[in-house]
Image 1 (cartoon, rainbow, N blue to C red):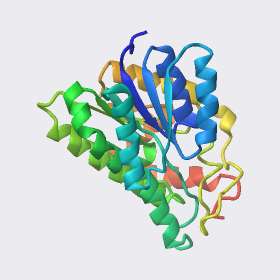
Image 2 (image 1 turned 120 degrees about the vertical axis):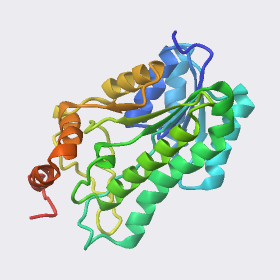
Image 3 (image 1 turned 180 degrees about the vertical axis):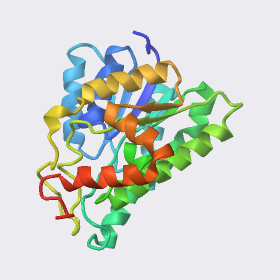
Length: 270
């Protein structure tokens, strides 16, 4: 119960890493505010948690909408009176070459991934500073290295990295902890719901999900990093290798990344 009496807000909480984080924090004693577009999925999670007397507040939110993000934060304050941890996890991906992708797809990805992080962080900031809490951005290796076929996704993650880095520097003397978490490839539904060039959902994942980290494993790593108040968390050997080699051998990594993604099923490079 190492997070007992802590109030944690998690976006994108209805599936994948977000859902796993809800369960991980709940069993550690936290009061969880779970935000997602599907209130039905959130209600099912709440009902399941209540069987073990865990506390969760479900809030319907589309993080691309400024006022809905404000409502998420306001709901947490109205119910629990404070915020100790905000995890901006909600996100969508895309898969198409830049020459082919429609501009509205790029805007949608940026609105959810980047602006969703901006809105939630902005409205929660006074409460996080007061509690000397943690602001956590769930990012990606794509925030360190451009991934071919993921133009908008990569751009959004680079933007999140810059945003959180500045927030961390600005709060050197306030006590606010800022964590940038980069899980690497995780077995979740983000690839199934990724946008194609025309904005439709991709449907079938192009990668072997069985070989990836589970959302539960990622959630435990993130919670541990928050507890230790780490600045950065990069998971998987593949992810750490890309980040390291990019500093010294950028041309080699460009080639390695290209060849890796070209091997995907139905790759846009073929």
